[in-house]
Amino acid sequence: MLHAMRIVDFEPRHAEAWKRLNEAWITRHFALEPSDLEVLDDPVGKVIDPGGRIFMAEDESGRAIGCVGLKVVPADHGGGLEVIKMTVDEAARGTGLGRALMQACIDGAGTMGAGRLYLETNSALGPALGLYRAMGFTDLPRQETPYQRCDVWMARAIP
Image (cartoon, rainbow, N blue to C red; front, top):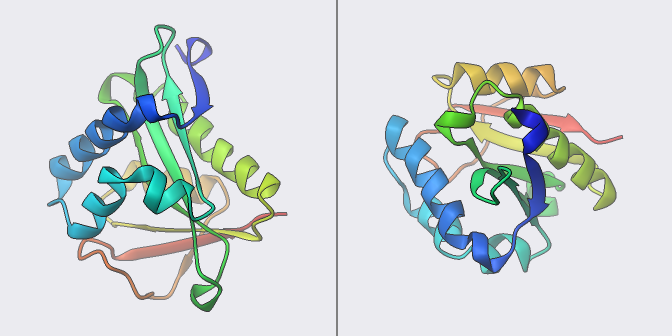
């Protein structure tokens, strides 16, 4: 099924899908928080305009079935890019799309000149943790975070 999917840069036409895909996974496991709504309601202003990037995965019909963002991390918080709001539509899980989205982040961070990728997640999200570790992320000590649900912090170097 992965062969029929493609990963593209975010365009304004993706705004509704960006919000829908993320609200679906967040509300399945947690409560939406103000920091979620900030980037879901204004992906261009909060992620792209400050120097970040958003990747959208589309199926063969052009329907958005996954997404991930790269948000600039200020130098005083370690620098690099933060992987945010990564999700795959339930119907596309198990297809390798999550791995492809993470590889897009790693490749994108390299072309953007970032020295590291950082992410915040939750220990209950086992498949996501497995993917992150398989793709070179290692655990960090507790970090400052705006998210109540966050209890795992990870990073990886970008060669």
